[in-house]
Image (cartoon, rainbow, N blue to C red; front, side, top):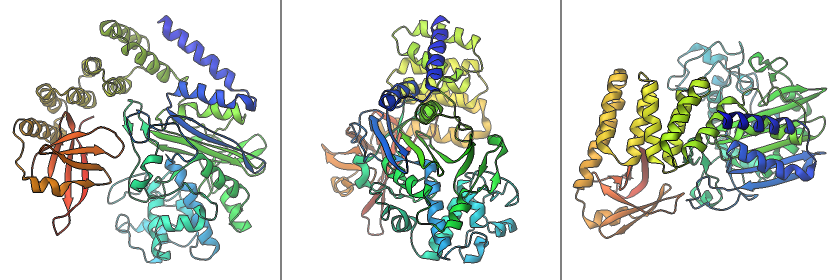
Length: 557
């Protein structure tokens, strides 16, 4: 227990030290120190003073796992997934359209003639306006299925919703006849010379793209081809700072529209007293000054931005780590000072009991004595049951597996099943550990246990068993395909490059430098040799020419 106590003391001391504003010459050192605490591979940051970019820096690595085409340091043009920092950019586009009379903030969206069958069967959909989308009072969930279910009557109260933004995107595209990307280029990116920003992923951007790092240490890319105003923006801290500079000065908007954007539209008491939402931005009071703020969270890509129009100052930072938010308060306080109750309202600092326990457990299990690590895990769990729970143990198992410590991953996952025998998620993670280790029989055996624990999820367990048994069968006897078919599939796709060698297809993913042999399962479907978890399917056009490779993952963990 002494090591954990010492870790807590050191981390707390470091956090206290960060509450004071650091001299500018120490900002770089402060950033790199915090990146270590938050387990953050790469970070880009820009600080605004006197209405211009005053200081910026790029730190760490673009690729969280160092095995892809984006190996190398973070540069000024490195693209990060900005996640929900997309929303303020889209809000600005909409407000510019409002100023030109293209959109009315308070006109019901259904009257623009855009059919949206995900909500139009509910009469409450007729109450949704652009204003209610931008201030998150549509009553729609953050994300949902089809049809979308209203949580309350639009206008009644605040509920953060990406779905509202997607609906408004459809309306705006319908009215203007332009795509989101075209509008963004026209209204924001080109005028502001944001040369490294886009709402639409394209393969040509692969070499610039940061690869994210999950808390489990698994790499993840954000390369969806779909344009989404709530989440798909790829940008740099430098570009986003340009946007903040223009925004805080009200450039490109009528004065009345600018003031509406900065004015509270709805109170957000769940985030704290005095917190509200304007049009596209959260609003908080810090001392005598009003700040606008927004966070971004796309799983392993996290960041934040805030600005004070009165002082003409602000900050934006982007990371490629699921731990990116753990340093938010310390980073902002070290550079800007002050408490930001809205910005900090939903962040878990790296000094939290859970994050400290995670750090200590990773250290224990990445040493060579597995028995000792398990003994200490049990001691620490008994002492800190709230911090070291089922979820953290599951994440620990995934982390170890993704780092090649398969024996430890299996041991930790088995421990989790022992401690939480009725948890389907714990059993599911043990299946994944066996899949990662290539042990088909034990993966199937554990899948049978999952059926007992959660019989209601029969389809899921059936699909896992079917996947594993077919994989094993095709490894032993591949589906026979003629050489002409294989050659027809060769080419470059969004998912990666496919070639033919020694009678087999060879697949190189877009973001990795490893070649994997493909094992035919049917005329168009292939398993990846040595990887139980991945399957590829070639899709063709009516002429039989391949046009797309769809990569699927086994549906466990």
